[in-house]
Length: 367
Ligand SMILES: [Zn+2]
Image (cartoon, protein in one colour):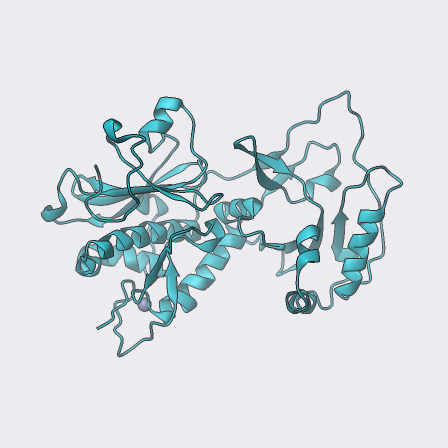
């Protein structure tokens, strides 16, 4: 008898056709299938989590941040800008360039900011905008291109800005190409002001700055908490202990994830820090570019630590756990690399470093 780990409804009441991604696809896809099958009902999946993840992506600091990494090579970025205002300072000396959406690309084992050729359309909701990557737009097939054309129906030229590169001020080939693309999308672009980047090779450009809030909003907290519980569920299933997922101890956190219960964010994300999760990161004083997820027992509670792309670390409180799990080896930890799509097992035992432990999930993997 199938039963939803979130809403507790059974097969007789709800359907189970979809799959729940343990880590939202916005954060990458991996070589191993990281989905929960027959555990999250279609109602929770499509009616609750799907809109939640869209709001997370388009209107939270974290979500917008992952759009900058564009791990899925999407041709479009969507920013709602109802709750979150991001400020970009390009350091290029003109407010016009601060309107550009910055992207992170991997360079020399580090993330660097790149300004990619893009078309910005200010017509998404009340305050939001779309950013289309010109190079990705060009790759679209007819069907996908038509979908975007439909989306942009009625957009006026005044709502559109084009940012392109060129070899010199007189080379407007890339700009013409963008105008042609817009024409194909049904927008008759009439050029307003044209601005050029200052070409002064003697003075180094100021750094690109992205201003981000340090607080976590409710939607972001719900998504991060859901990832923590999904990951724990994956481990419990591997151990053939899906029964514990239905324990009343987790009722509160599930109600929070479902949006049925309001809790102050700091009661769910009990710590926001930068202290590395992995011993190797501490030893080498270098954060890994990847997502790290661990869970363990702390003072009778099930706690998860999560960090995305080597950035800040969220400590999530999932709920009390019974005595049977108070064991030294209770816990599990993995690092997910969204670039090469690999997953690696984590260990806290220095003797096991570099031993390339076989990748597996379970409840007693804290070695
Ligand atoms: Zn459900």
